[in-house]
Structure formats: C-alpha cells, structure tokens
Image (cartoon, rainbow, N blue to C red; front, top):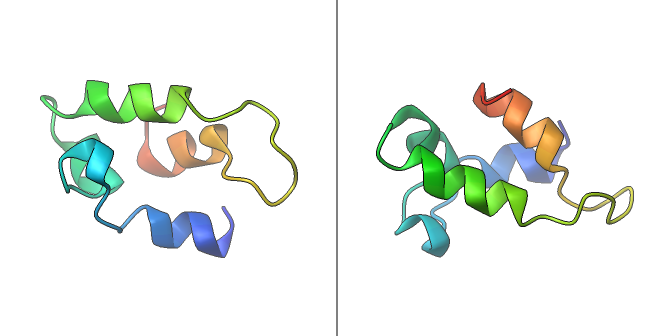
Length: 62
C-alpha cells in the first residue's frame, strides 16, 4: 500500500458520512457504503492512482 493510500484509510470521507474507511470496514452497517465507494474507483487509473484492490486488502475486505 502506498503512503497516500495508507493516510486515506484514516481520513474522514464525506461519502462515508464522515467516517474513515477503517471505521466503515469495522461497522457492518457502513461496510456496504465502503464497498460501493471502492467499486467506483477506476480499475486501472495509473501507477499513482488509488488502487481499490490494495485498499480492500488493507481493510480486510478481500
């Protein structure tokens, strides 16, 4: 996981009602919103783009 992706995991995200991705991953009621958000990321947006697969792995959503 890249540095900016690691930081993103602990940032308040408006699409998650202000929760962090880690909080959403740990909350069964918020997890579907997180999965939808990750699914909205482009599959191959380049080397420096957020990578949904790496983020899913870091959040234990594989």
